[in-house]
Length: 282
Image 1: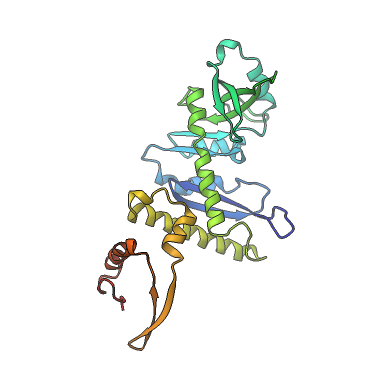
Image 2 (image 1 turned 45 degrees about the vertical axis):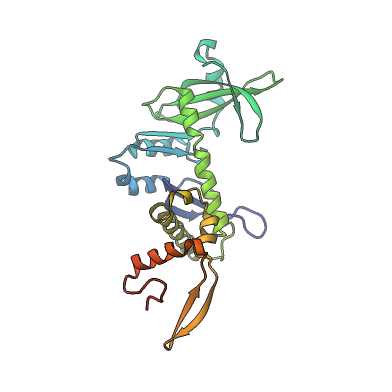
């Protein structure tokens, strides 16, 4: 989160389960994953009896956080590992040519075409007894002489580096969903100076996001499942309305698109069955 001076003032750590914003913690920007172990321990029952795949960025790549991820009991997990890469880069450079998979043509986020080769290595961080596998990918652009490496830490159950890297790229979709929440609910700037008040504000925003996701998944047709947060707000929440007085009671008359009238009537009948379709619920 950015303050009025353009400096990073707060960090909002979030944990997602499918389309749902499961948990969030607003705090200082120093340790971006400080709340992760507690979040995982608290919510572990939600995935312990089902197949699960945990994806995280490099903010969760320290040995302590990786141990917490392992202890959380996910079927599979992968974490971007691009902060402490000196030793993994030496290990990757020492691998024989036979250790690398066949070269692939891929496209980076900026659209650049690169030649990439995956391989699997192991790594033990300094001052730690925790050893874990890394899926490595060395790549170079056309005309470059030297390889550049990227790494993803992952669970022990998998060994196909190419498949692990491909699966881990799905994390980008969840990052985009997080950006949509920030943009759609205007959460880039905390509303006040009090950390307690800001935490309450973001907790309410997380609840709103959770409810909107539930409405989309449970109540909207398949054609609407690709809606982003801002689209859902525009179509379902920010509706034009006028205040009206009926039988000495003040109410609201909401305008909806004709194509959505039956949906809203069904919604009203589901949640306020005492009222008739098309009439105020009371």
